[in-house]
Amino acid sequence: MSVERATRAESRRTPRLRLAGLAALGMALTGGCTFYHPKPLSSPDVEASLESPDRAQLSRDALQLRHPRIQPLKLDFSRPLTGEEIEVIAVLANPDLRALRTQQGVAEAQVFASGLLPDPQISLGYDKLLSPKNEGFSDAYAGSLTLDILGALATRHLERQAAQATAEQLRNDIAWQEWTTAGQARLLALRLFYQRQASELAQQAASLAEHALQRALDAAHSGDVSADDIEVRRVAASEATQRALSAARDAEGTRLDLNQTLGLKPEESVSLADPPPLPSWTHLAPDELFARARIERLDLAALAQGYAGQEASLHRAVLGQYPRLGITINRASDTSAVHTLGPAVTFDLPLWNRNRGAIATAKADRTRLRAEFAARLHQTRADIADLVDTLDHDDSARAALAAQVPEMERIAKELQIAAARHDLAQPVAEAAASTALDKQITLLGLEQSCAEERIALTLAIGSPVADVVEGP
Image (cartoon, rainbow, N blue to C red):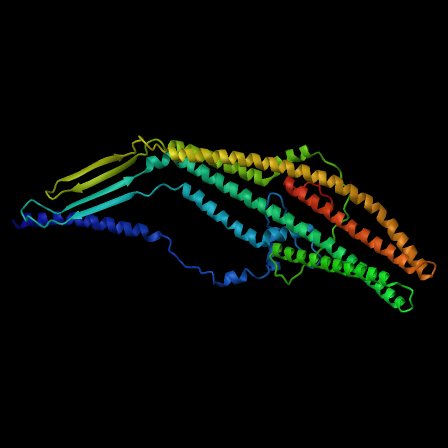
């Protein structure tokens, strides 16, 4: 009798041991989990990001730059930086681009997650027998293992396809933002060059107007100049001073914008190389440039990848209308020590929902992406046509004025020499010099516009085309 009781006691302990073993297995499986570690915004790395980038590190990174449109190069901070070097520095050090590139890790994590199968679900239960204490009854237990592998495998390839397309879209989006930021940095460096020259000329014009005013004030004591003439010169001197101050303020604002684009502190300054002379503009057919832009522009490639991802998402939504199968393996024992083992199948019954909401949303998103792609094409074609037309007019005006300025400078110098010999009235020579300075400032403005428009056209095409932008 004691042997039988021991046997029954052992049989009652067996379910407990099994449950304990399963619990231990679950704890062992969770041993490889990731743990949370706080990272507050007050950490030193946030403060370090406010510092200017380390030049030695920039030089190393520039040699390893990987970009579909910008080539790696060797940075040389011992001499003035060229436009190509400014572009590379902007790509590497721009704070907004640094933040944008962190999104790449999110996309890669999504691709990784799309390839994972769902974890099995384990359900455990135990019922302690309280009464009656009759022989033949025992504690009850139940356990089940549920797998959703069949449902996951049906859409796994589509989910992975959508995630990969999203990651590729993000890569192209980041590359496009890097490309446009690099072009903006080069444009700012070019603008700063012309604005500094214009500021110097404006300062010369202000000094000339101030000198004319002072000479008129000196002559007023002898009655050779009327009060009206003095007032005219006073107004001219004041306007020339305001123009000089405005030109200097514009140049300083551009320098600050360039520093922000390059990730530098506001008080820092970089030495910039003078751009080569701007050559004459050769008209190019907008349709040919637009055809090249459709191939080269990274933002169009990103939109195409986004559309491909949405196609996969729509296909996945369509498959979602069919029943999703789940398999469960059940193992149980009731209080009368009856043991059972058997499978169970669960699936959705597509009567009312049939995933129609998700399908409608996916179709609407696909229609939206098609419209966005078409709109971007229209905008690109319009931008290219507008820039080509503007360059045609501005470069013609620049060429015409460039032919006039040397002659006006020559005449102004000759009149100044004649005035010094007292063969000509000084106000006449000063007026000629002032006119020549104004024309030089106007010519600088046209040259700046033409140079910036060529960079803008290169950005609109999406590729550094040598026959579009020569020089700056």
